[in-house]
Image 1 (cartoon, rainbow, N blue to C red):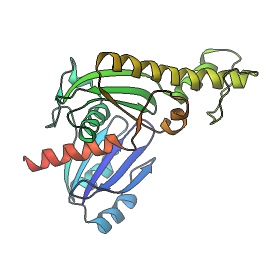
Image 2 (image 1 turned 60 degrees about the horizontal axis):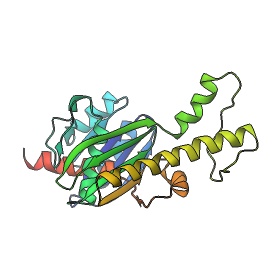
Image 3 (image 1 turned 90 degrees about the vertical axis):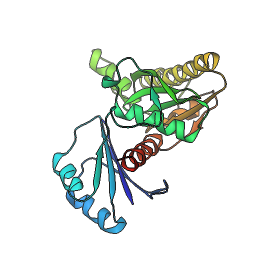
Image 4 (image 1 turned 30 degrees about the vertical axis):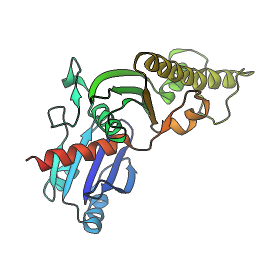
Length: 243
């Protein structure tokens, strides 16, 4: 079995894949510890692993994995099944590369826009020829809520809710409407502009806040759970098989 680790800004996603590419088990952890990893290695006989990190990598856990499996530390210099047509690939987050690889794997020979709603709102575009052209980054849902009390004197911190009014008749509801609907309008506008420039276009939507936001998005989207993890497994397969 293969182990795929995506270390993000908030959580660490750990997935077990079969060697045929099927997702067997998924975990979300705040920390990676040997106590957490050891039972996984025993239960699934892990032989290969890949780690992508945009957050704090835990050295003890990584060393433990490396002593027991073929570990690929993912960077932009690894072999990829897509072409990075990006001006500064050394600055490109590995999560964005993996997102693009996963999107291309899900819809090969198609123009694909993969949008992730997590800590940040990230869009990545891959054309039908498998060329990654870039995308956009803006503040995520919770970052927008947190910015209002941080940069004003009296606005409160509001938590996301599933029911969002068009017209807020209290300060809390006004913030809720402005942040959630504003983000949905941003996503709809982004999809519309990409479709105008790169039609036909497949749109993938994922991330921790995607379930809430997709209720307010008017454009047609494909809800995908784990394009980054899928992409990382594809990269693992390519880099191990060609060594």
